[in-house]
Length: 255
Ligand code: SF4
Ligand code: FES
Image (cartoon, rainbow, N blue to C red; front, side):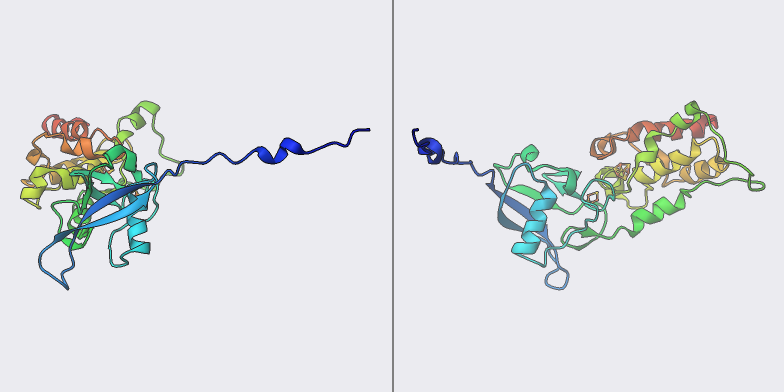
């Protein structure tokens, strides 16, 4: 009987796999008030898979090159709203922006969102933003005794404010608004979106109060309908439409 051989078995060599990594320049606007009163741009070259996100690149720099680089992030999946920044001149969430989608052949510019005071690098003071949010009373307000069962609502009634429930308070809209840049007193789109969410909720009974708050000189009439906010929203909320609905409710007092 012929002896079996394993002749061909070792011939199969692993095919060489092309590296997915490319070299990308992150041009980051750095600011550290303990070092200088001026912000300045700093370049970092990183090796990264273009299918990764800008947030991954920032982590790479922070963990491997410069631990002083300062930015906010938490969930890393587009839910917490903490990593809005200006990437190539446009407000985006770093955790939802793929390197391959923003022309990695050129330096990628990254800076803090506009209109809020920069505390360090990409971190801004969010207090004025959240104050405007608090001012519109973003919670259900009802009168009378507590009901003995849940407050019912039809599917159509729920639909009226469905879009504005999606807000994650990232401030990408408010900090892309030229009115807000020029005058930080304006409530801004995010506060109006969150007022809309309750004004048009059939279970809520403080719509009139919220409308009066937004009728203020720093309220909804300051909006110039530039659509910057709608373009910037990572949740795809039709912000300009929501603002128009609040304006209409103020005129007609129907909501
Ligand atoms: S409306 Fe959109 S852009 Fe504005 S804070 Fe909410 S999620 Fe962010
Ligand atoms: S880190 Fe939470 S939204 Fe980007």
